[in-house]
Amino acid sequence: MIICNSRRFIFVHLMKCAGTAIDATLAPHMRWNDIRFGTDVDGGHLSRIYWARHRLHKHASAAMIRDVVGQELWDSYLTMATVRCPYERVASAWGFIAGTLEPLLAGSGFPVAAPPEERMAWLADPPPGWHWRWPPCKAYLRLRGQADAFSAFLRSPEASRQDILLHTQYSQLSEPADGRLLVREVIRVEELRDRWPGFAAAIGLPGLELVRANETPAAWRIPARELFTRPEDVDYVTRLHAEDFHRFGYQPWPGATLPEPAAARAGG
Image 1 (cartoon, rainbow, N blue to C red):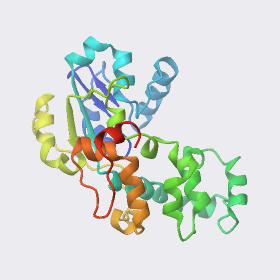
Image 2: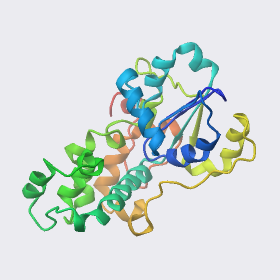
Image 3: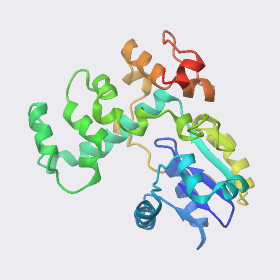
């Protein structure tokens, strides 16, 4: 999340939608009165302060930010968010988790070859670090090595309680009461490179190049079509995030059932 008072814009950072790249690109241009919750030390410290005082965090929804800054300021600033194809977004989350955890397992003491029950017992009192405590990471470790690990991950209680599966992207960018879109500019990640120059110019930074950041290591970057090998998984995510397919113009994969817009808005 970025609230840039010096350039009068707000960026709503949805999980696994290139937000870290945008944050890293804009961070050097932030001034004393700007607020950003990035992955660096400064962003982390500020995030803790604003969570304690205002309940704002790195992936705060548009409505949460609007309620803190006020309607007048929200309407006067350029508000922007990026969104992503739901299949690719879930696949990116899986790859991110794998790329974070796998290099740490050898020296962690985690019982890799043990049954799920023993793994969860270890995770009940893990070493320090968010990667052992974040629910989707716990789901990954519990299911690691199973033939249906990805499929089970999609439906796991740990992962399904998190934004990546629990909420549609549109719900995080809209008014909870009536579904009205709150963000003035929504850019699809698939079009970000082409549309970035226009956004950079609009905030007074013409010519600013978008950097790469927080990319999943190549060893764990698995294409969505290689992960979604089961038609029932494709159909599950299509239904779960039907609203995003309708609102942002994404096309479901062949064979998937896309609910009608009204059904999708009601939870499908």
